[in-house]
Image (cartoon, rainbow, N blue to C red; front, top):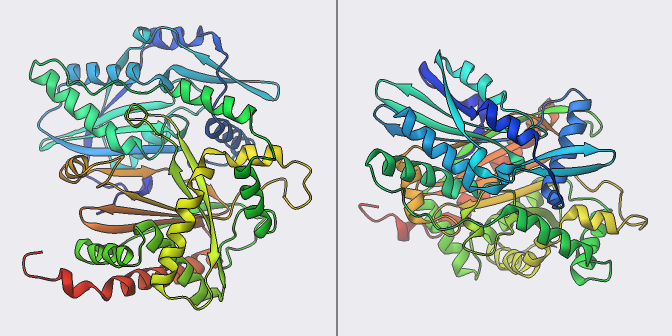
Length: 472
């Protein structure tokens, strides 16, 4: 049921590795790409600056999204070459690269996507550890070609994978990358015209629109006022984790824990408990996290940020790119029960969803000089929830994902915060948590995850009998 895991968790027998990289001619074309007036998105700029800061400290950065799935038979390398090339040409985020000019970051854009050609290189048999090294070697975000595609061929079939720097992808890529590549690949094998996938949106247009909105945003805007009030309630910073994480000034690698929290029957019961309270699953999970903090740390107010897509059109949901904002959540816990907290959390989420369209980096730019806001409001704790059975994903994609043994991996980097990723699949609910790799944080996270799991299961237990009929 694993849907998100650290890259070092990948295991498998030796297999023959083939990698697809841009051709030498493509790289030369990219080098000649002119400067574009389109600035990087706020997400991209923050990522590029964070990468450079990590590089200067000689630290690794968790920057790669690695999507993996299995296919039967022997891979037709010529067919997959056509498909991978078409994919990179189709999505315009891949056509950009970035350069530092003083304090500014400028974008270069290839004007002719047809100049891009992906070429396969078969590198022989590799172990799981060797494969991980090749993935980690995916070029950095300041390189144009910070993406790689590949297969691991075995006698029984092959594993497809894509390693894409976060600069060009967010979690929504899971919704369509596997479906797009496998449907086009099978069409080419069958001698058919590749399936019409519908035109993707333009990530360049997204970046331009975001910057235009930012230029018109002021401290007087209600969304900015709400963001600043949220930060003020957290001592001018993002929310802090409820338990000790070690010395805040020290630097640690990220460590991960992954577990399956609820099977499908229990998750169905949990969702019904949420619905009975007037909430959805995200409201229920926020309620369980609030109950966990009350139990472990005695906190009477819960505060967290949760990411959400800022895509709004069908075309946007068909393109890769980084289109994510965060929603600030905080509410009183006191002695409230799960049903009371679930509806409170849900209303909080729904009412503040529009704040995701105002990047936190923009808020901090506008808030410079305000005595109540720290100059750096990063870190803290983040809770993310993704349901692969509902839009922007779908039950059809979820079935393909499950049948293809789909997985997502992230490479290890440094961590000064806690990140919680919940995934809802056909198998139930899983959790992956990242935290600083030290003894204090490790002990805290094990206590936290155990209590959080218990809170989720208690919420589901009340309705489990209704979902335990024979055959489920």
